[in-house]
Length: 454
Image (tube, rainbow, N blue to C red; front, side, top):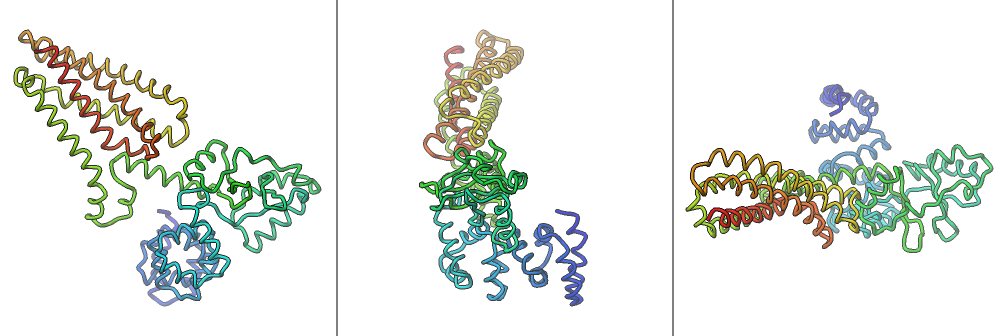
């Protein structure tokens, strides 16, 4: 948390306790909204509402956009309708949609009744695109220019839009024809550097490689921002009419969200767990993933039972089961994690995915052979008495070498398979991969032991 807010929390609480509203207003209107948002949880409900009441209107909107959903709902329930309506109207369109998507239709109707008709129409339009699409992430607050407008006139137009607060964050502007079809884009820096009498059509750049349709997934949009180092992207419909703009601040949120989802799914759970305080709800989220592991355990038990004769006659075989399963599982998760991130970041082309899979096979083979030699040597030294036991080193070495190679291959193939059938490949790096690898690795090991030792 920011040291700035930690310093001022006692002053805020002291001003509230003493009823000194003037001092409270001075402090809270001095602090950046981002700092107040970070320290919001350190205040009680009463203190939060006192602070929110003392903040100037423009800063109210900024703070409201920055605080967590639970606190936004808290303010909505405790603030006067006459104050709430203007705040909702002034929110950035994309931030407002992110909030409204969390409410029931009944609650939305109540909030809509407080808002201007134009803003209600905007919310309904953006919600219709879907939360994780370009349309759902775009803002409808942007500045358009005409191709035959001069740079001087364009700057004046931009100044008016900023002064009247029609737009908040401007990184680029877009020229459109009379029908609203996008013709080109111009960065703020390039506009400022243009000669006053230059036409926008002469200084604007093509946007064919960066424009996206409203239905495009947010992850694909994030890849576009990363690939071209963009600050904003125009969103268009099928006829190339400009619908809105996605800015870098929204994409940073998307990257965080996608990374969080991938990480928690790799661990075998869901991102909803981070927001839940209920042990029962968290257990409910984890249960299906752990059930996969449980089924894998039963499968492993069945495999061990099927090779009971091998274990009975050569008990030493059982000693190496843990290390073979662990090493196979570890390298499988490593491979699948790399492939999942590669797919998420667009570093792996599905049309040429064979090269990535073959690379993981080679890695698994190299590591498998090296650890196979090590384990084989340990097994040979530990169990060198008797004809069959003399071969246990060969079984253990081959077992771990083949198991790690197969595990690395499966770890690379499964995420691609999931992606092909339109299932988030991150799920393949959790219990599904480890369970599949355990079962396959154990089967390979027992087959080798039976063939060589019996």
